[in-house]
Image (cartoon, rainbow, N blue to C red; front, side):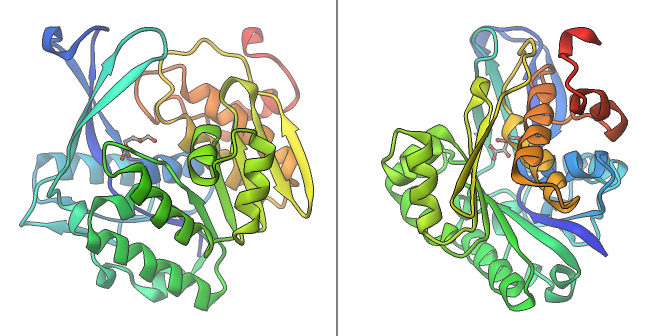
Length: 315
Ligand code: KDG
């Protein structure tokens, strides 16, 4: 019934109207953002059937998130509205073209109380893929246990798991991140890491060597995202590279999620690694042209000309 089910925290994002230190910013634009729901929205926009498991607070921001993600066509029937804790919020600070910092106000949030019982095995069994990220286990012990529970359910049901390490060093130390993420990566079929994350996890600065090291842990398909250089994929002992789509970058946050949505869409369509990487690169690039995480995600009809090899400048 679902192509993909994903699980994780979504927050209200306050994006500054102008660049500079936040102490000087007086106007913000409100967005809805969260790594896993970004992937869900990206896939829904490409025509896939997607479900998202989470918790939001019983507050206006929780209502806003639910309305927004439901409105994108993502199933939110498994999202718990938690009256005991608020919806998380984060702020972006723009420090120059494409460079942003984030400030989280999410400690003790509703989603940080996600618990293994929030995972309904019958829901996950209906999916062709389960997509998880390394943000959720960093949020709390119960979130970590929830991720492990979702992995166990998916593995028992033969649902392949895709995983984006999404290392957030504001949430935990590099050492703890490495320990937990390597353990999770050993349990999944597909891992999509940035070059920086791949290096942090494997100690290998060379992306190809890092991909081999990640594959040695267990995943049958490894992707390393190379930013403006595109991405590489390692599967069945072969390495494939695809170039990025050149665009004018406003903000790179959310690009990894868009890439993941594109790559997964390719895999769901039965495409090979090279074609899936190309779709991931196009999705990632288009998302960097706007300040929010999902507003730049293209529809399927917008994607088609890019797949034909036209440049962004031609539109
Ligand atoms: O990938 C983009 C996410 O990092 C952003 O939306 C916020 O989910 C978020 C997080 O936890 O950092």
